[in-house]
Length: 306
Length: 98
Image 1 (cartoon, rainbow over the protein chains, first blue to last red):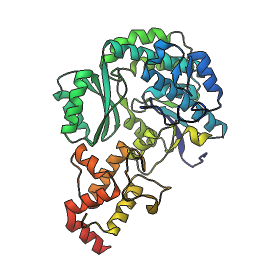
Image 2: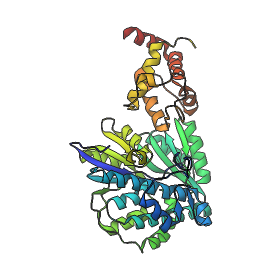
Image 3: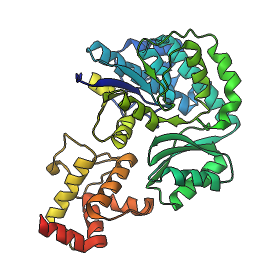
Image 4: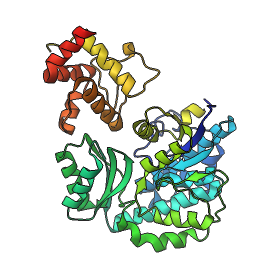
């Protein structure tokens, strides 16, 4: 499934999966038996076994989101590796939320090993933050931007718009009590669906400014190179060019909202006619379908790659 | 259930295929009574929003909230019944006109 077309192609790296993919742990013979060197490296470098979805260290294994984060990174990287090996082409790389780590590797700005350690390290900081000060996130579908803003204001607490994924698709983020009220109000105002995400930290909200220093310090040890493919970040399509800028992005994106709609609109203005999602899910593909029904959007999952 | 014609059932299936761009699925592949979400076609909440918009545009019926949505999107037949219950005349006119 390699696509050639006249317009430009963007590879999209999705954020953290919201659940364990069905294939993991359900197949006979130990689950997700993908013969891939990345999985061996995950065990050696991060102590994570994808086939049985567990971390060697008990203190890491108890964090669901940490496991989902590393799983998402690995599955995106395997999809990308196979796409590349089959001669798949691309002109841009973009990412949504925590998809930045795999996107950086695909753009050759960081190595696979460093990407893995960064994804895991930041995931761990987020989990520990969520334990100390519980918060959460919820996807709200159906309401418009004005209504969402009004709900955040009506809550009279710490509730923020964390993702603008489309004109009627948003993610709210905040402290536990405010999120609860936000969910209730969203349903009351006629949202088609409100799904609580697994995150325990209020990602992409100002509440996470408090972890800035921890993340900055954690990032100092990693080497970042200029991307070799135009890398478009989820802030309305901001191009990430300079390594220092990327380092700042990795810190700031944790407490600033994702503007996926703006990002896709920017790429459309750059003559992109095909978006290929790298990973086992098709959430970004469906969001792109909502933003522009005429553009080609498809998911190049791990199964396609086999 | 009354008022739901085979034609309306087929039209709802067509709407689902077109709205969700299910290029590899034919009308015959969609079961009339099977669940659309989770199991069955495996649709999700982003798909639900597409169907809400599709129903508004094609039939002028609106889904006011998640509770109604949950009932309406149980199956193709439930969607068809909701269209009939809310806009019987327009459906009849559309059926007659095509």
